[in-house]
Structure formats: structure tokens, C-alpha cells
Image 1: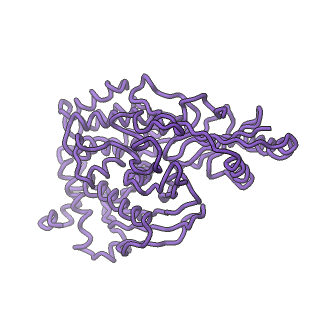
Image 2: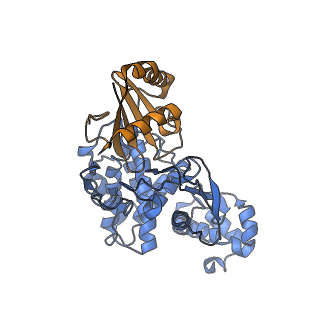
Image 3: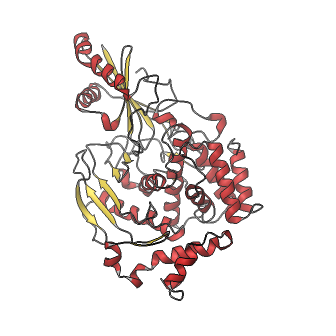
Length: 347
Length: 112
């Protein structure tokens, strides 16, 4: 809030709405500042009751609602924790609440987006879904988490990356809405893994070299041979277990998996764009959410990614976004080019 | 007669396969017509993408493939209604399912 105390809100709105690329950084800062404004100009309860729309800028506040399905496969379940309420006695509910906050914070504080839809949408989650339910999913409106069967999986909220992955499906729904099949589906999955790990890295204060780059670390039950479900640094190495088999993710187009299972292998071939992102972040160094993450965010929200996007089209879009944001001959644009070449995608 | 159920997708992207033995009479009178009905209702067959019928905004949900002899149907989790849940529970109870990441074996239900 200290950021914006000098500049009057109407001026922030004008700057934030600027489409002039020369003012892109200022516009982002202004949008960021505007997101922080409601406590000053309207008061928390008023802002919660009615987000203020001003042109393209929406002022909003974080609003989380965590419900408990009580072991049934029915949604939404009973509300157990609303925004600002104290922790409940349930670990999953508290993990979901905190994970929603961390994800909201990345999109809002770093990229200036007001919630996942850009318009202050409340964040809904349901925990304790189903009996021994081995999954977490996004149903189009809310995140849903199972407790796991206790043999292969424990509770799915145990990893922040699972929560941020699911919430990012909401972000993708309201930005590119990538079709959930084949390459576009794998890109949809990859965006969730990318922003999923970035949320965790930012919470832990880890730079690209320190981070684990793992998705779903800690959700396997004891006894499963594996550290996580997926690795962006080294796709194909997250687990190797007698019962589950080996992590099938490819790291390059040469190993692309053609299958009709899993919506055309959306959770498998996501390894390729996942690894491209990792390579960009590793090359640039420092906090991955700042430059690499910014390029991917700009790509997803820039309008150049069609719903049926291929890997090659996506590579082109990231290259264009890097050029626009950092310059055509920038280190960042060079890192993006090199990354896609390494994973065998012709942009 | 053996009925195979394989489940792919989900957040983990793991494919698990279960099977259940039923009498020929039960298979032909109860399950084959249901599989055929599901396949013909556009909810998927071997010739269609495995997500046929998956609601447009759902992500990370399971996809089920049910095979009885030459009959096959593909159902998104959200359409796995009561008769199928009964069948799945019986298959799970009958024996430990095998698990394998999708796409690593043959493209379809794996033999136990």
C-alpha cells in the first residue's frame, strides 16, 4: 500500500490502462498498486461486497471459501472456513486455505492479476471428497481434493504444488482456455505445473538453482518408490516403482508419446513444455517467477495462444512475449529460443 | 467372462486396470448392452478420443475404459453412474489392480 500512497487512484487507473508498450512496466506497476488499494479507498468489507470495476482494472480482495464433502462425492459440501476465519481442526482444509492464498498472491502481487479470472473471482475449494479418493481436480468452478487411498496416495493437499496446479487450471480457463486433448491439453497441464511450482518456489524463497522443480512431492504414501509425480528439471525421473512403473514423461519431442489414454497423454507430454520452461529459468537464474514466469504469464494472457494451440505455436508465442517484454535481442529472448531448440520444438 | 476396467488421467496421469469375472449370462444380459449403449451414445469407443463426453471445463479427472470381449466403452468420470460403480467396486474387491503410467504399455487395457 505504501507503493501507491503518492499517486492518486485515478492516475493509477490511467497508467494501468495504458496500451503503449513503452509504458508496459509502469502499467504493470500501476495495476499492481491498484490491487492493493481497496483497504485505503473503500475498506475491506465494502470491497469484498462489491469489487470495483474501473475500465480494464478491477480492484479486488482475496476471498477464499473451503468446504468439506465429508467423504461423499457431492459438491460443494459444507463450508468450513471462509476468508479471514481461524484455522479449523482439519489439516486438509487449512492446507487448501493457505495454498489458495499463496497462489492468489503469485498472480496478484507478481503479475498484477486480480484473482484467477482477472476480475476478483472468489476461490472455492472442497476437501475430503469421496472415500479413499485418489485424485485432485478442477471442476470448472472449484478445486476438489481427495484424501488418497493410503496405499499409493496420501492426502492431495499435502503438496502446495497440487493446490496451485489445480487453481492454475482456473487461470487457464479464463485466459487461453486450452482444449484438454493432445498437445493443447499437454500445454494446459504444463501451465498448471509451471505456475504450480512457481507458487511453491516463491513461498520458499528459492531461486531456480535451489528449487526441486517437483510437482506433487510428498503425496505418495509411504513405501512408494518415488519423490513426486513429475519433475520439470528432469522429466521421466520423478518415480520408479514396482507397482506404479516408471515416470513416463518425455523431455523432448523425440520421445513424444502418442496415446488415446489420458485425453491423449496430457499428463505425459506436458513434460516437453515443462522442461522448456525449466531450461529458460535455469539459464536466466535467480527467482524463476520473475523473468521466466513473467514470459509465460504474458504468453498465457497475451491473446496469441489459440484454444487448439500446438507446442510449436506456443513456442512462437513465448518467443514473441519475451521479445515484447525484454527486447528482441535480450538475454531472455535468447534463453527462450535455446530452450525450445533443446526440447526439439520448432517455434 | 472377464470384464476389464482401466482408469487413466487424473492429476497423477497413472493408468490402473482392474478386472472382474462374471458369468456369460450376466455379461450378455446386463453388461454388454450397457457398454453398447454407452458407446453408441457418443460417450466414446475405440475410434474416438478417450475424453469423448468429458465436460468441457473439468481438468485432471479420470477417464474409464470398459472392455468386455469385443465390446468397449469410454466414460468420463463424471458419467460413471451407478451400474458402473457397482462393477468397479466388484473389480477392485476381486483382486489387486495393476497400475502403470498411461502410454507405457499397449494403448488400451493392459492384460493382467
